[in-house]
Image (cartoon, rainbow over all chains, first blue to last red; front, side):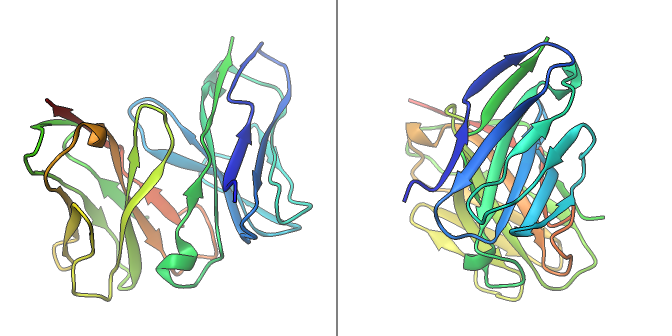
Length: 117
Length: 118
């Protein structure tokens, strides 16, 4: 298994540009999520999905959009990039929710570093 | 809202020695999970260890063990026989079992930067 994969690894955007961060997992996980990590802070949840066709907002959803058309993929869209969105973005997945620690443990992708000028 | 506090922004330890990283959390729930994640310079988030709140026995994984004090809401990580490869940021995380996957599902502390010196 490749686990959780993210592309690109690094991206530079200009203010106002849009782009999509890709996330895919091959573990048949139902739960997928996006986090951002800023200096001096832990990870904060942006959006999450408990299954194909179901998404919801996390702690910091403004400026981001998601969709989940398949179990495997969970792309994150920046609609109009702003310097405040400069961050490292992590995608994570787990088997499901309301289960055992094994099922609930979230596994992370390698991250995408985004710089917005 | 649940909060996770890691009071040690940075720590250092000599190779082969033991170090303990602190974590406290605040919750009114009685059943939850706790995790420690490691983030080396590669930035990959790697699961180190996990603990179920209803289990009194402390979790162990090779050189890593936890001291889980439920009443004190404390979840410290002990690393024995420290190795150079243990140099990383360590994040404590709390998982609320009783939300429907919402924003408080997995809450992270701000991390402790651990440096293992040769």
